[in-house]
Image 1 (cartoon, rainbow over the protein chains, first blue to last red):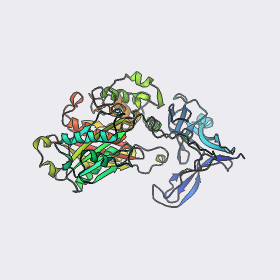
Image 2: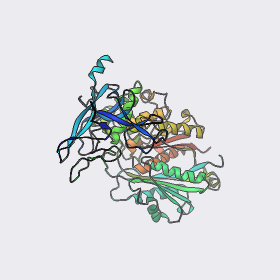
Image 3: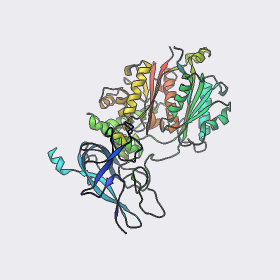
Length: 139
Length: 401
């Protein structure tokens, strides 16, 4: 059967380029990735979809070397501040998982990769962040 | 003394470790009976029992302990609040006394974890028929731990530490490692600690990396144990024998917070803001300044966490946690000893017991009864726990004057 499905529903694959799309509170602008009942900041109950920037910087990271069974290690887990708002957790990919190659504040850009395939041939597409070489040169 | 003060008159903890032949009721009962004996009281004197336990939080642990040590018909509250579970039990008794519903009560924290391994990270679910379907609040089609970052505790707290390092100078792998070296060294003097072995800074730094910068020796172990505290009202205290009054320790502040909204807190638990809020309120309620503290038992589930909390609890200059550990200030012979029990890193962290055990530790020092590990002349101490999700509890305790 084939086809693709995002690993999580806040990853949008249908536009020109993959993006994260948040639920933004109409009242205070707080952004969320999960299904909402109300806003945790202002208790507002109306939300709009908000596409977030695909570039940002590493706010914090850890290099995971021991994990639950079935989780491949090592990998870099990072908290990324997206340009223009929104903070997201994901892996840093496309770089060695060492403290020498991953830097705090490092510019990164959103990338996608296959995370698995189900029995019907559908591919789950995950996102991560790769070093943003273009930004690195100017920063 | 003032008429609405709450006092601790009995404390105990079991040695933390592994008790494969016993159950949580054994450990809780042992701790409760020892705390009652320490207070020169019995279950017949108690008007409330609060039981903190996480792994059996749906199984009436408080009543099961009662059925071993005294079924007196009093109200029992079984509480769960992640790693703040024990402190929550203490606070339930505190609130009941403050409210005038009870003048005497006991908090028991207990946990049997065994060798639990990493907490928090989810393994990938295995289904019989494997077809992707969006599930849960994020519409995930499969487990995301390890794909969209880590949710395992060593990594979550490592990330929190690195965020602090990102924002402040003089904080790195070595500063985090020094925290663990200190706490392991402290534990050598504590016979109740799960481990009592010192390691050099090099050994800490060269140990297996679990989640950088946390190595194995910078992570608390899982384990079993229990602790208990008996508390009374000021009015009740005045009716008790003089030797009980002399050893009483005042609860000058009992504060609990949850995490207020922050943007990054949606994806990475913010362990700082709620701790800062709790600390500020505790200092205000107690009328105590950070420089008045003689010792602090804080929540060093991982070495990275302890460093953050130097700053969150105002023990150091803002941004100065790296300098604070480098200066030796939190060592037992330093300006403000932190985790002289060995901390969670070496004393151990049976989740439900932890928040009562740190009350035991500070109380024991304020009474001058801590033996080899006594901080001489201690008059004011602080306990701090944080349960991820999140719940923070801070108690400020003062020696009777």
